[in-house]
Length: 441
Ligand code: NDP
Ligand code: HSE
Image (cartoon, rainbow, N blue to C red; front, side, top):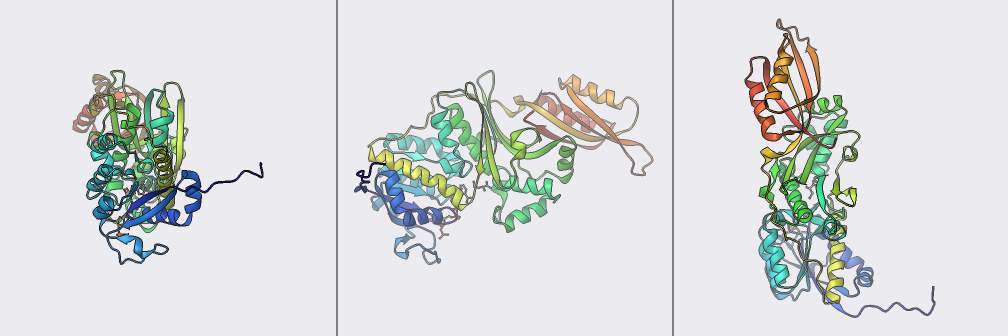
């Protein structure tokens, strides 16, 4: 190393306003305060934390100088002269007005707010472009995992065909407990709550809203087309039973809550979130606990997998701080990063036209001709059976019955739904039919 080389300390200062000082915000504030020199060297300027907006300024917050706190978020954004605003409040209101205000006041924005971007992303991206400022949101999808920038920049020259992933840590943790510790849904949810993965109101996670918002963001990035959370077909994990988990195990599969975005041969995109059976051999089957992973298939790059912690204060703050430094570097050079690339208007394929494989199980009267009737009913609706297993049920009842479980070849969702209805109505199927989609063969 050249001993004469001197590192010149940056002289310029960029003013940073932080909105929110909760699980993620306090970690970001800590980095800004404790690693100021390191961040300055990386960004090429000092990042001066000018204020932190919170709901309750009297709450004790270790390591946070009280004089930085304010409960006037709108005033901090409008009058603080911030160059960069970091939004870590969450939800739609007030973050929507605060971010738009920051942008119109000329500040670049970093946010982790997937709910807002999935609902009002287009408005926010357009405002940022009009005002020539950055909007960066790496932390909005899968916490610490770099996936937004790879889709937005590294893979932009390629053609993405599908994005499939585990993007909600809470539900992955619950399904993992059900699979490996044989807990039922309620027990696993309670454990997730005790450990702080699931909130007291777990609806956003267990009903798939959080994953649907992330799926919408991923689909928009992958296919350069506007996609909102309400475009996403969504089913959560509340109906997944221990019997489903055991049935998956018997087929060498695990149950995962998947977010899937695909483009079809008619150039239409489909975006869905639902529990699915995934074979042990697929890389996503090995993603356990609160981890996230995203599997991308691109025309030239082939198959790529991104994996890591999808939530938590420190991991999420890592992604936020990465965005902060990037945005600061852009600002120092007087440039903005890539605008949101929406130049396509792909149609959305209705869920009924989605094609996947299905695992179906039900109980039948154990009589001759029953399996033939099942096969003929499925054939009538263009559903082809891949494999089938029948197990006699010995429960002491007089009439013999059997459990049938089968995996189909790829079939159209609308055809499969008709089969389900007709099977349930038939006189040889006893009780309800349980169906689960199967992915990743
Ligand atoms: P928290 O609920 O822990 O923190 C929210 C913060 O916002 C609190 O400091 C709260 O103040 C403050 N706040 C709430 N309402 C207002 C308001 N009206 N004006 C000013 N401040 C307000 O949220 P998280 O840190 O968990 O999440 C922040 C964002 O990061 C969300 O968008 C979330 O989706 C996203 N995210 C979170 C992850 C995680 O693991 N937690 C992972 C990935 C993304 P006070 O402290 O006074 O209550
Ligand atoms: N609740 C989310 C999860 C973290 O469990 O993955 C925030 O995105």
